[in-house]
Length: 119
Image (cartoon, rainbow, N blue to C red; front, side, top):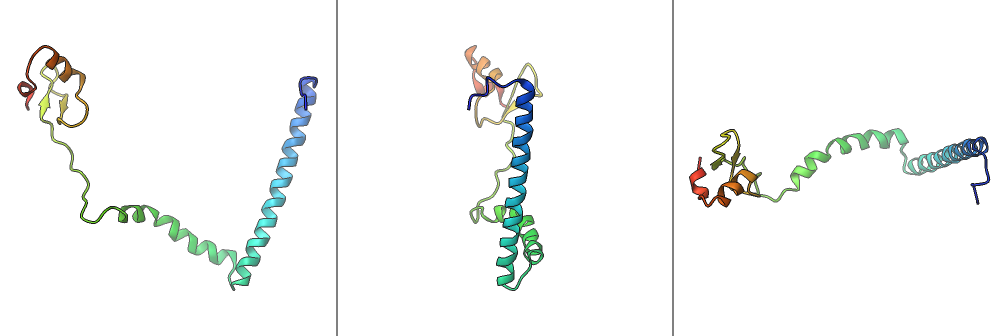
């Protein structure tokens, strides 16, 4: 379908018709699925409300389930301790783990020892 021949008002009318059709089909699909789910629940002697009541606590329990998956005996890492301090700004520290901060790289580039920065 070549839309380049349509005027802007024609395109807007077409857009409105498409949005209405999408809304209509979506509503129809929703109603059909709801009826199917109600029938499935009724076949098991339940209502959708019964199912939704039991579904809510399961959704709330997910974060606890994630915590329970952690390997047994494995603890969270403790906060790292600052081993080195920036002499130009003592508020900046580095634990010695991970990437070296730029101030530590600059210090080493001057030929100085990292041990001189020990906190």
